[in-house]
Image (cartoon, rainbow, N blue to C red; front, side, top):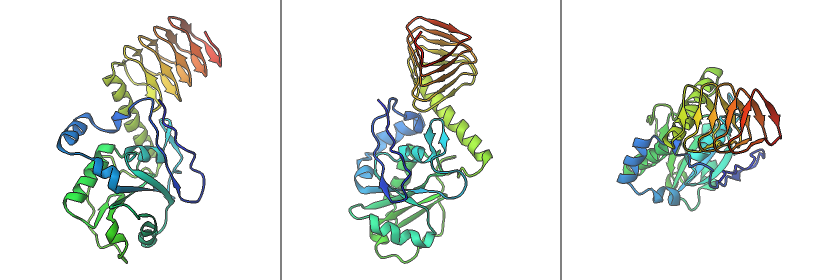
Amino acid sequence: MVYKFYNITMEMDIDIEVNENQISFDFLNEQKETQSLQQAENYDWVADETLVVLIKAKEGFSYDFQICGKSMLDWVSMATSCCQQKTIEESAEEALLPRLAEICEGYEYVAVFYSDTPLLKKSTFLEVMTHFSKRKMNVLKLKRGFVFKTSYLKTAKMMLSTSIEDFGKDDFCVVNDARKMSYAFNVLNNRIVEYHKQQGVVFFGESFVDADVEIEEGAIIYPNNVIKGQSYIGKEVILESGNFILDTIVCDRAYVCQSYLEKSKIEKGKSVIFQKLISEKV
């Protein structure tokens, strides 16, 4: 199962369609937060009544800059994927209200997020929407972003909310320089690795894993492995230190040590040591 994110290069407004991913991306939510939220609330109303507007930020890194195999915009889109989404170009704050009023028809709420907040989690998005709804607010100003009631957008000439409310430790961290980009990469990589650990994958030390990599239960990964793209790591595979694996299938019980594998396939039970394989089958 794979998410397909359509290429976002056009200047006009577009809709984003999100399909199933090859992994569930539950790592976007902290496990304890997810359980408590799901027990307390039914969030169908968020999907039914909310339009998410994604703004392509102009400052800092481009919206399509890749972190752990996904663009910055993709990460924000995934955190809010339960809702219909539209993407627009960034504009001055005074021009935002009339622009949103043009596209909000048919929705009770409009949530606005920016591409430069790739650490946003689904659990935080749901928390924001619950806070807004229960307090019957017209405007909620976030550290980076807004939530509006549609009826307010249709008549408002200016934003009346001046206070900024904070949610989550990292969710609205603006990634607009090299230091913050490094931090965002580490946070997202840690979330991905933690997800795989929960699925029964053993990590001995630090490795780097892209979002679309699939790793089966029982695999053992030693330090300093880089696994990128649409790679698949089978059951009971052993990856010794020092491998670079890109868009490659490593079948069950294979052994790989200090090798470069790109668009290749390692058959079940095979050993690959000190090899460079590109578009090959072993």
